[in-house]
Image (cartoon, rainbow, N blue to C red; front, side):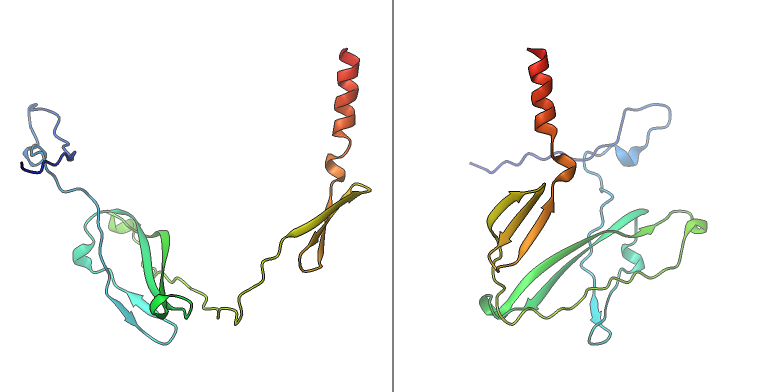
Length: 166
């Protein structure tokens, strides 16, 4: 028994016509998608450059940048973890040179040290309602007041309308 694969391929050929486009008649055609693992070089302690060479810049359109980084973290196996950041529409390649803008893209990633100790989970332990105000008491003995004045009285108004209908 031989394995079989079923795949849908791009075919933009619509028939013969007067001037058929023979390049599009084959069942398999190159799709206008560019995926390029960029060369990354460190410029300084806090700056890196990712290159996108001209030979890869084939198709006009907006391009996204996917950053996959290894980060030191003592709490993970092998003391490292991977993070992925997707930046949509980082730059655009245009087909008309008059539309081109020469503007390098800079993305700033703020490097913050992780807290020395794991942070405590804070949650609501109690809630009390009084004078159009809800006071939520948290597990760290702090509280949050929620003003409910804009929504108070709706139930009474609804109850009065219901009684009038009966």
